Image 1 (cartoon, one colour):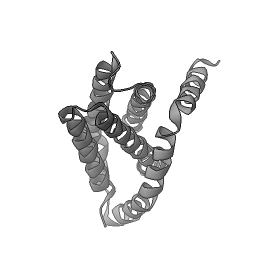
Image 2 (cartoon, rainbow, N blue to C red):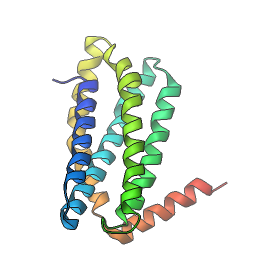
Image 3 (cartoon, rainbow, N blue to C red):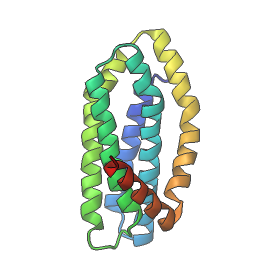
Image 4 (spheres, one colour):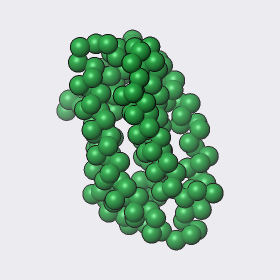
Amino acid sequence: MRSPHETLREEHDHIRWLFERFDETEGIEERKQIAKEILIAFEAHTALEEELLYPALRDVGHDTFALECGQEEHRAAQMQGRELSLMEPGDDDYAAKLRVFRDIVERHFASEEYGILAGAAAMDREWMEVNGKRMEERRETLRYDAAQNVRGGVAGQAQKVMEQGRESFSP
């Protein structure tokens, strides 16, 4: 059984690998598929952290500011990801949007790996086993749910973006 920090580092490495594959690929359809895979993987990763890891770390008194920053990084990346999901890899500003998305994701991974996950690695064996098992069990469901969200089509994604915008600006 992997620990929570091992599981999340594995996900970080997988998403980094997907970005590299995107960079190395030239065909528009292939790039589109890889971009979807990146969005699916990041959405599932974010849900896993916010549903399981962050609450478990809060329960044991982990640095709440670091956890709040992690959630804000998630939101920033998700907004950029939603915009990307409405575009095609051949669109004029797609490469720039993907670069910004990647920068946000990489910055988030770095702050987690040297902060939040380092704190998780210091937890006792029982905490690791309980939370590692919970994360492994939830991981596959989240990946499926994320795939459904990303593949929901342009109309569904546009609606989500509009709803997010309304939530952000409502009094």
